[in-house]
Length: 363
Ligand SMILES: NC(=O)c1ccc[n+]([C@@H]2O[C@H](COP(=O)([O-])OP(=O)(O)OC[C@H]3O[C@@H](n4cnc5c(N)ncnc54)[C@H](O)[C@@H]3O)[C@@H](O)[C@H]2O)c1
Image 1 (cartoon, rainbow, N blue to C red):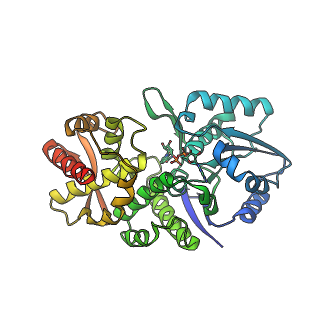
Image 2: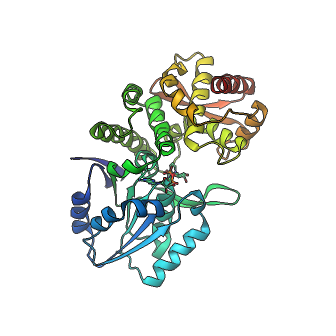
């Protein structure tokens, strides 16, 4: 069983995101309808290839000439060097404007392969097959592709929409716990900015990832729907799309201050959402971070105490690339499900929210 969500790119252009279990038949039918059988490039995360090679071979069996190229796992693959490697391999083998690239993996593979598809021959068809929870509910939707630069993350890239996305949640059977909680932080973000009912659903499901599978399909589907709604209203990130940064301005500062790799992105976002929630409450909005409490122990379990100081966190927030005219822009909540943008000049309130949040994690 699968569910399909349309994502509008422009008035008369859209693509479909199919979510479900064992999507081999749907994928095959899609390919038969859209591509010739000649050739496909499969850019696949090395771990996913190791764990799911049989399934992936079956998926692409419609094509006569299959070129599978592994992407080394990890954030360091999102580089100009890896983009260059992949592009060289593809051009040496030979690619036509109509030859599809299938990206199979998490956000790293999706962003990198997406950028390869966007640039080779000035753009070839791209299909995303996300295999992490984060990639299913977040990075495969919205068309952001790109790589990192030594001066910062995601500084080189383009908006490039896929032809289609296939989110087969059976890939998640092999996902490690830390990747589950990374994806879950983004789902909690959707709960906070759009659909607070997701808090209750996740509360029931968190202790047994992927059980029952159909409920997880529904959670992924609702998350996709929320992200798709937001990005189609603001494809180029000029306005509402900023709401997707709820918790992220705080979270990025924490990642930077703790030293990248010490804390995962999901943990940082989770903590950042508590800080953003506390800040909103201090401004008088009726939101309490108690909504995040059922998930606290899960996030705390893997983390060492946070030894960062609030002064360093504020400095990191000031240097965030999203800072405009020296004003820190925060996404806050008027109430649950209702985000707004706030230009923060009162840094004492920021400090207070950080102290509150760090205490919560260190006790
Ligand atoms: N384009 C966007 O809009 C967008 C949005 C959010 C995040 N991102 C980007 O996404 C990236 C993070 O993505 P991620 O969290 O998926 O990380 P990732 O792609 O590095 O995957 C995390 C780990 O899971 C492994 N893995 C993937 N699928 C697996 C599976 N089914 N079973 C077992 N292991 C599996 C990978 O090998 C890797 O070790 C970052 O680079 C971030 O910048 C992009």
